[in-house]
Every structure is written in C-alpha cells, then in structure tokens.
Length: 200
Image 1 (tube, rainbow, N blue to C red):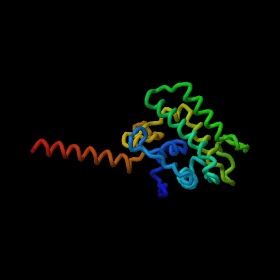
Image 2: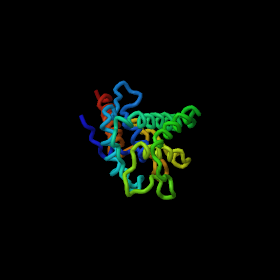
Image 3: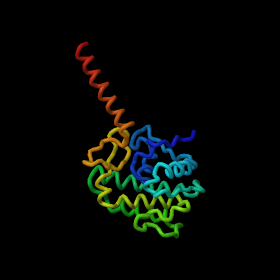
Image 4: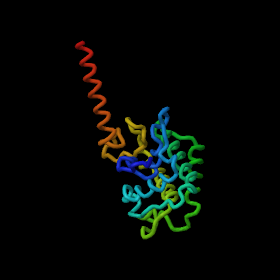
C-alpha cells in the first residue's frame, strides 16, 4: 500500500532527518520501514521537492531508478540515524560511526559531477532536477555544522529525530500538531484516570 507522504512525514526539519524517520518506531518490536518498497523512495523524493523546497532552494529531486539507488539511500539513512541519534542521546559519538557516515555520503555523491555547496546554493543549480541520493548526502553532511548538531533532538512521542529551531531550543516533539497533541491527550487521560481511581 502506498505511503501518504504528508507534511507530518517531513517534521525532521531537514531532508536527511526526514529520511532517517522513514523507519517507524525504531527500537520497538512494531518497527517497520517505509522504504521496504523501493518505489516509495521515488514518491518520497517527489514529496520532498515540495516539503523541503526551502532547504533545497526550490531544486526538484528525482529518483529515476529507485531499485538501483536503494542500497545507497539506506546506507546514508542508517548511518545518519546512528551517528546523530547517538550524539543526541549521549553527547558523543564513536569515530567508527562518523567514518561509516562519511563513506555512505561519499557513495551518494559518486555519480554527481556538478558544482554543489556554493554559497547560498548548497544543492546546486535549481534549473534541473538533482539526484535524490546526492541531495540526501548534501543534507546529511550539513548536520555536521555545530550549530545544527546542537539542535538535533529525539521526539518524546514518536522517537523521530528533528532539528529544534525554536528560539530557546525547548521543543520536545517533532510536530506539535501531531506528537505534541498526542502527548497532551495522553497526560490528560492519565490525570483523569488517576482521579477516577482515587474516587473508586
């Protein structure tokens, strides 16, 4: 069944974290991978062109042969998640994680021979589409900037990674409208339940 690539699926704040979050419920027995069907990579790239237009400076993404790039995409996705989830949870990350991450990103850029990372134009010339795996690598590498790394958090509700761009860096959820409201509803239910039990 096709995934509905809605705005909520792009709550990570950058393309690389949105992609990391395509594995749902990491570390839970109920976990599943939205990229199990490689065709979803192409559909995700199309949606990302819209929902990540600001980050991409309006450059469209394409994944013409999703089966062919799937291993590269998953390599970047998994090493990105491992590196930044560890750094967020512990404040440090092993050199082996960084090495694997850099190798995965290099693989994503192997076939890209155009200029990237120009000032104000990290994803290159917006007049033509960019290969999804190359854009994913550029986005992932941007997370190494200290001011960005410091703001990466793990959602208290769904366990997704996200960049907290709030003024005082106090966000707890990737998406206030979804995860924030779910947590508020859960707390309200628990308070009501405790009150009911106390009067039983």
